Structures are given as structure tokens and as C-alpha cells.
Image 1 (cartoon, protein in one colour):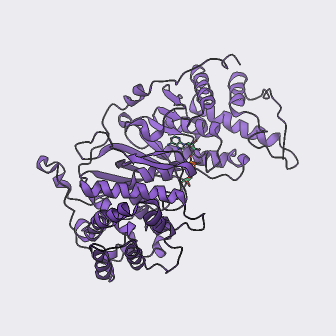
Image 2 (image 1 turned 120 degrees about the horizontal axis):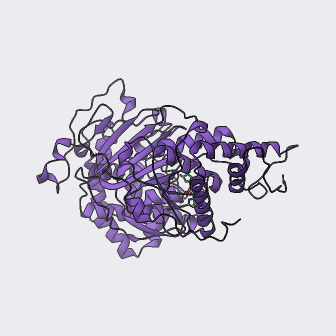
Image 3 (image 1 turned 180 degrees about the vertical axis):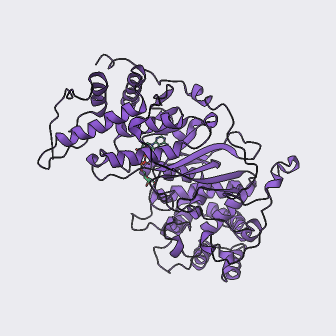
Length: 528
Ligand code: AR6
């Protein structure tokens, strides 16, 4: 292939992609029937108030017929006075770690099981010097307690649940989020189940126990460092920003075959850098679980869980967002990053405090914008190459990338979406994301996570598609032809796997150059 030796560098310059969005993102101005604002929004534009936390929006809570549509908080139950008394007992001068364990057990109605707190206990008794642990217990813990018990003063209106197929937004102050997370830390949220069965968990108890994994679980210890760093920061200096969580749903499926949009000209591909280091000018992809946050309060520690650990405000989405269906995505704007990390999965470690330098808008939202998009999980490579699954992933990527006015669309920062824990094929997922970007009118910055060969392969494929002016429908038809080719060359139960299958990119090139009738040049070996 004449292209093979051509070094395309990183494609379009990252700085160029940052400038794509011509208009600053939507300003938060008022609440509406589908946007609940949990603080007094009239204070947002008041310059005198810019340094002060926003007062809560006040609307008395009544137990209504539709109570299932709102978050249940501990202070809505008759257990609150007992919970509060227990929490405040942690502010005593001679508090010990075991007292903390006892209080969490009472607040969360947890079983008295020896393994229930093995990670937290290890953290306090083995990971830290006694003086350090003592400082944490006597200095930081009372501040987390104060945050938790101030919940009734900070949240004075019912918090709506962002339920299945409801296009809704919810804005909270960073201070309100901090108080909700402090309650999650002490496990005060009433037991889940019933209307909550399709929601992720929010109480942190699953972080305190190794849960069947080798004890003490190193991943959970690192997550605890992130959480304590977050609480330390926000209790030293009250944050006064605003975060918006929104649920988006695709109205109707597209006929991808007939789409005439050209492939976006601007594409940056780099083996260096990560999505979260792009500095806020991008729509940043979260390789999500349909239960947002995935295993962040458990064992998982890959892209999504790491992101939620270094930006713990994202964890509050688990309190309000029902699990996503195939045509839904969740967006979060305005959240702050608090920690750095090194490594990945088992080797991932907290790497100190992070000062988030992204600018803050007049509506007090930081210029951070994340989209949670859950790919399909495949148990074997072949499964993803069928029309239904390809369409599903295309619609998921489209609902994640689309749905804002064209002049406000920043570039998307993404990478090997669905190709790690969920075992997707990077070439297919790249084409799917590229097609969705084309329809949504966005450019793309793609991080290959250290893979230099992939960087060049993707850039070459992109150069080919744009040189030949292949539109979305053309790429889609070629991908579908590839799946048909896999079908027609598999006989007697033989299945391709990722090693034995023909190369999707090579097939696509031949398809575009010679048309659908010409057979692909390489006849691969077939393995079971
Ligand atoms: N920036 C760019 N690329 C990255 C980054 C990063 N910070 N981190 C990882 N990658 P994975 P999935 C690359 O496995 O397959 C979670 O538990 C890296 O090449 O996190 O969609 C969720 O909760 C990695 O192999 O995403 C879901 O349950 C690839 O992205 C599930 O995993 C995929 O990362 C989602 O799995």
C-alpha cells in the first residue's frame, strides 16, 4: 500500500480543534419545566454574590403521589434525628477509627460483618502513619460530618430523578453536591430497591469492603485517597460553582445508508495524551456503563471509574440517573477535577492534588463537559459485526454527540470507546464514532492511549475517506458489506475471530475503489 510509509503525524492540530466552537456553550439562565434548578437562580447574575455560595431554592417537600419521581433523602425519613445524632458524635475529641465504622454501620443499616470494612480499616490502620490517621479523624472527619448534617439546609426542594426516556436537566450547586456526597460517604441514603432498582448505587459502603476480591483491595484504597482529597479541598474552601446533569434521548432512528454528510475534515489522532487532559474545550467522552459510573464504588478502575474518582462530583449522577437505554446518553457540565493519577486498572494510583485551571462561565459553570456513552459489551469479536449492533452503536454515539445548535458544537475528545472492558473492535468503533461526528457536525480528537501504530492507521483511513470524498452513507454501506462478507465466508459453524478475520480497513478501501462486486484481495485463514 502506497500509504503505508507515509507518516501523517497527529493530523489536525489540537489547538485548531479547540477553536472549532464559535459560540460559548449554552448559558444557564432560568429553570423550566424540564430543567430543575436546586439553588436560587436569581442570585446567579448578581455580581455581589459571585464569591458566595448560592442559596438553595426553597420549595417545601410534600409527600405526593409521584414521590417515586424524586430522590429519597435520609432527612425525609424518621431515622434522620438518630442519624444526625450518630454523625455528630464523630466530632468528639477522642474519636477513633472504630467509632467511624460503627457510625457508618448504623447510618447505613449495614450487617455487622467482619469483612464489611476491611478496606477502610486497612486505610486508617495500615496505610497511614498513626499521626496522619489521627489528623484525618480529628480534623477532616468533623468537616465531612458538618457537610452531611447540613443537607436539610442546603437541599430545600425535591430533587427529581432523571428517569428513562425523559429529556430532563438538573442543576445543583457544588456545595449541594458536596453535601449529598458526604451523605453517601456515611451511607445515609435510604435502602435502594423498588423504584430504585434501575438506578446505580450511591452509598459508599461497597468501597469500604474488598467484596470478594483479594483483601485489601488496592484499587479501592486509591479511590479512597481521591475521595478524601476531594473532601479535604471542598471543606477547606467552599466551592461556589454550578453543575448541570442532563439526560438526552434520540427521537428517531436514522437511515444511515442514505446519509450524505461528508466525513469531518478535522481529525486529530495522538498516541500521547488522554481525554481528560484536553482542557475543557471539548465534549469529553466517558466510556460508560449503562449504570453511570460503572464500578466506581466497587472494583472497576478503568477509564470511567478513574474519571469519576478524580472528579468525584460526577458520582452524584448515580443518585439521580436511571440506567441508560440504547438511545440515551447523560451529559454533565461544570464539574471540577480534584486529583491526578498515574497507571491504569491494577496499577492506577492517586498522584496528588489537581488544581483545575479550566475557565468558569458567568453562570458559574466550569468549562468542562462530559458525555456518558455506554457501548455494547461483546463476549466474542464476531457479535459486533451485525447490522443491529452497528446501528445501536451508531445511535448511541449520535445521541451522545448531537442535539445542540450547530454553532455551539465543540469537537469531541474520545478514543477506544467500548474496546477495553467491553471488547469492541477499534477499527469498527473508530468508523462508528467518525460517522456519528459527521452527522452531529463535530470534529474529533482521538487518543489511542499509547498505540502509535493505531494512530497512523486511523489517520491513513481518515485521509483516504476524505480524499475520496466518501460520505457517511458510503462508509456505512461498506461496513455492512463487510459484515455480509464475514457471513458469506463462514461455513459449517466456523467463526472468525479478531486474529483470523479480514481487515476491515483494507476491505473498506477495496470497496470504495472497486465497488461492491470485487472480492477482497486477501483470503484469510479461518479458525474456530
Ligand atoms: N483517555 C483516552 N483513552 C483511554 C483512557 C483515557 N483516559 N483510559 C482508557 N482509554 P474502557 P469500555 C482507552 O475499558 O471498553 C468501565 O467499567 C484504553 O485503550 O474503560 O467502553 C465502565 O463502567 C482502554 O482500553 O471502556 C464500563 O462498565 C479503552 O480506552 C466499561 O468499563 C477503553 O476503556 C466500559 O468499557
